Image 1 (tube, helix red, strand yellow):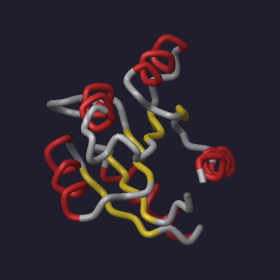
Image 2 (cartoon, helix red, strand yellow):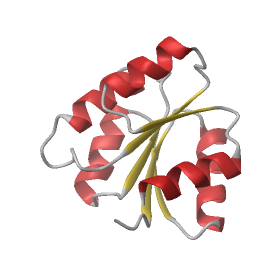
Image 3 (cartoon, helix red, strand yellow):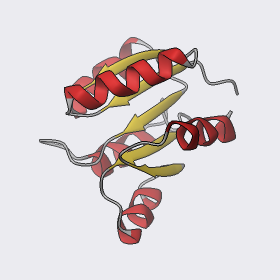
Image 4 (cartoon, helix red, strand yellow):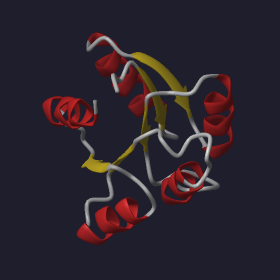
Length: 121
C-alpha cells in the first residue's frame, strides 16, 4: 500500500506545524487533530493511509486512542506510528500492544521517520 495521506494527532500546535511541514516537504497530504474527538472526526471525513500518534494528550491519551482505532473494523487496517516524548522501553512495548505498528521518540529524526513510513508502504 502506498502511503500518501497522513493524519497527525498531537495536542502541541508546534509539533503539528513541524510534522505537517516535514511530511508535506516529503510529498504527503496531511490532516491534523489535537485530541481524540477531533481525530475521529478527521477519520470519518477521510480515511488516512497512516496515523502519527502522540501519547500525552488531554482527555483520551494516545495509547487509548490507538486501541480504539485499531479495534474499529473501519480503521483497523490503518497503520499507526506512535510519535512521543515517552522514551521508556515499557512505553514502546505498551504502544505496540495497543496496536501501533511502530514507535518513534521526539524530537523526531526526519530520516528515521521517513524510513519507518517507507517500511510500512
